[in-house]
Image (cartoon, one colour):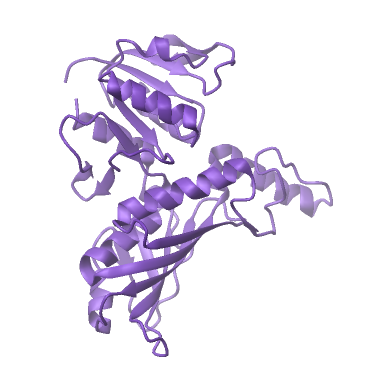
Length: 328
């Protein structure tokens, strides 16, 4: 593979930090790296990259010239969307982590590596974030194996959805509250520890909820057939979802169980099987399925399930970098 000129927008976000770390470790043959803050009015800073010091500069699309690849860490903003579309139109392979309204193929993380639909000449792609991966991958399997028609899901978000900063703030909130002090609220803007709140009340939360819903629907091939709610919970890393799946026709219980027996899923059907939890799924690379049941009182065929996955099950940064290898 030839040497690449690479750009990363919002390099201090969780996705941007992960991509930058992978590039520093040699995941791609980078001969030039440009880092851009998400704020056009930001100040330039210095960042270490391998044996060099790289300037992180204010966002300026004029500096995208001559880049081969650019990664956009999800901000769910019209500005990012426009910049990504313009960059791809200029022949730059543009990878966006989550985006609202972008008419671009979604990268699917499969057993044989990341793939995406579309033409070989496409230069704009969306990489789903972890929240979308959990529900989208689960529903994709249900649609392919069981002819799922519609679905409704409640997705429980951990503090890790805000990266390491979110995890640290939840930890500090717990410590403060147990010491009878006011909890810090710089990241979440309100108390998350010992609390549950609906995500989607602020401008940024609404953007996240809409983006995750769109990515999930595209991953599952269930656009216009999926409703999704996001709930912030006081968990550090694991993602969980309660999902109702409506089927086009009834299926037998054994077909339901067989659907989630193959990777990336794990399903314990033993007599002493316990419902999956974020603690039980810690450090696992599987999506753990439990709570499979078919209500008998409903006129429409369908089933409930409970899905849990740790952040080790999916890495949007690695998926993005691996996908680039298939396109350059």
